Image 1: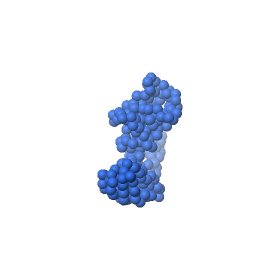
Image 2: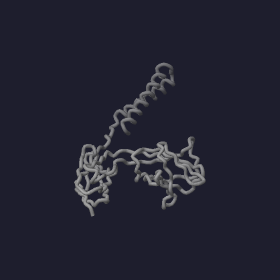
Image 3: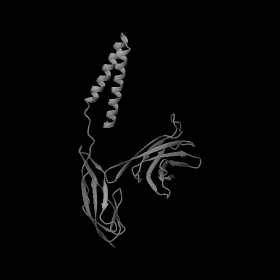
Image 4: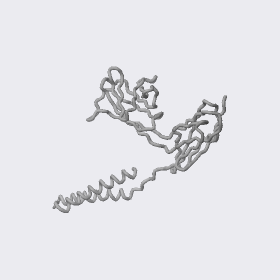
Length: 248
């Protein structure tokens, strides 16, 4: 439970108690008054339990590390950096990407599920867009129609895996988001896929873009001959990697 949920629940219980107390004090009598008193006491016990709840702090990054101390690249080559963060709770996570995406899906029609087919899986592990998105997919006689709230200009292509489809942009490039069905979908079946992008806090910078470039996910591109440095930061922890680029 986060702080926002804690406050919302506490507020809900306080309102419930106030309503019970008001009815108890102003309108109830006899047996009804006893029942309301019991209800008031029960709500108060819930409030007391909530107030005594020990909230666990959200873990934050203590430091980041990488196995690469320096890079020697040839113009045109690339290298993927792997950045591992150690958190205050002792856990270690890969924070190489500047953001992580989590995808969920739901029926696009209000009032309950009425599709013939089923989505069995949505995979956003390779999601490349730095923004959250709400995407609607509709099964048609010709294939699939795709609509996005953010007007991303997406369409779908079939992958080599059974009943798996991949979203591509207007240039036909895959965006790293796929979904799999049970193969029973029919015309009119529709779903909404919500992609929630969350920042990991990792930021990459290069000292000389004419020598080396680095994208949001830590992929390094050797651009031109020379020397430069890549600086990686996350929550105050910093790594500096010297880079030497030569011509083959």
